[in-house]
Length: 370
Image (cartoon, rainbow, N blue to C red; front, side, top):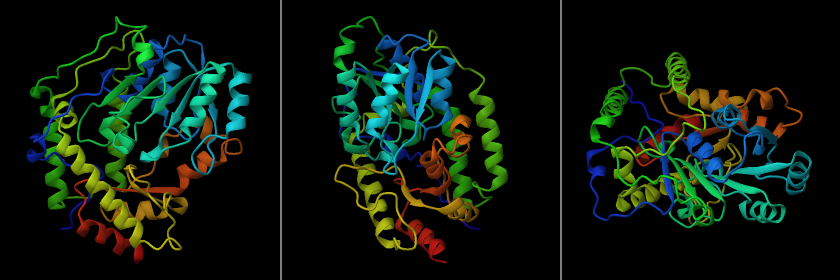
């Protein structure tokens, strides 16, 4: 039976032990999800309900639904073909819609035109919110002092953890809001047991090849479970509060050796796959990786998700983003948001996490070439 090549890293016992410790970055608030972190951040910035928040149209519904549910109005703007904002259109949208905050996304670990947007926000008195949910490992952005007003992370996209929402707040706002809770200790290991058991089961299934974890039928079951359990407890902004990080999240975040090993392995996998694939046959979203950039995936243009479906049929955890989670308003207005719809329909994300070996990459290359 053929093994599955999973989309996210395993939990390995050796990774839970550290030779070099590191502390959390300053001014960090922990949450169950990145969307909770975002909503709480707007509260810290004292952005009132009913305010307009501008977001890129290439975004997932978990973000926009959280904003709308908590009383904010969402203004969409299409992205350019380099995934950045059109600067002139951005200025116009801010003024015409009385925008109070702008969300900029560093997609897939790749930096956007953040500095330009930061300068515009400062000039117009608008809050700048940086979404690093895909970019925890890139350019040391999780540990360095932030330039935006707030920065939001979703570490479960990069680490084998069940939580991972983190809000980092610019020092100037912390000084204004000294009464907010900052959690410094972690939850008990017992809280992680159900998640740990599920990851062990995934590991056994993937290694034994019992069935295809990425078949259409299994994907449908996962999607239904996610929608059901994701809607069981949805708190309003007044109920969202910082929580303690899980035992596993705390272990990974304080393990400097693990973090450096992941960066090294991921960039090596990305460079190998990108170099080996003929760009005239399959064009990469990012051809040349800048130093410090740690991509979340190896991403290629894939017309109508043809390759993505083929890889998943072959038990490889390839994916699209946000796929079915693109907001309906964007999906139903393709003339207004052509680029966001194009990216959603024509990109494939190939796993390159730390547990992806050269043998795995060669298997992926063999499927692509044939």
